Length: 245
Image (cartoon, rainbow, N blue to C red; front, side, top):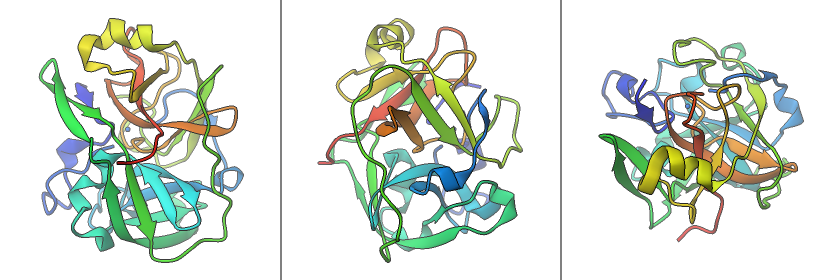
């Protein structure tokens, strides 16, 4: 697997109806109960029929009608937000249930851009805000600063060869610091808007993009990109949560 913005770009959406929809799943860890994370959102589209519920990314409720996700998850829908949905309270995508709400507005960070690492795409300022069509009676996740160890959540792949996981998993991941990502990615890693996390034992993977990286129970960053999943020497890279421009 090459470096990916943690969404199976090769699948596209509905056999190319939308081109490509970026996102990555949790390697390591254990099954998680979505009821413990009422703010956790599955982000998708009815057009993305290759995954249950159309899921291709994750997100986090930060206000009663606002969800943060990765910009590369939402950029294709910028002018058609009604094609996106978010679902809360679903531990297994294949089981149905949960609370599904449509998206009415998408705001992409104005600084969002792409660069190159070994011929692959790197996402900068990879943040987007989804405004929902209605407010939800759920407690938003608190936002904080990184420190200690982190926790990641997602419905994505359990390994680079696993294409079928649909359950929510959680894993505790080390936060090795910016130096680890600089060694791996050189100038492609920008500590001003990126955060380094993960190891060969625990990492995010495909269909986890936009999902949360927590530290001390607070949202500190969103799954963004990496070179493969849980590859030695290549930690995951996350978009630091910051005000959008």
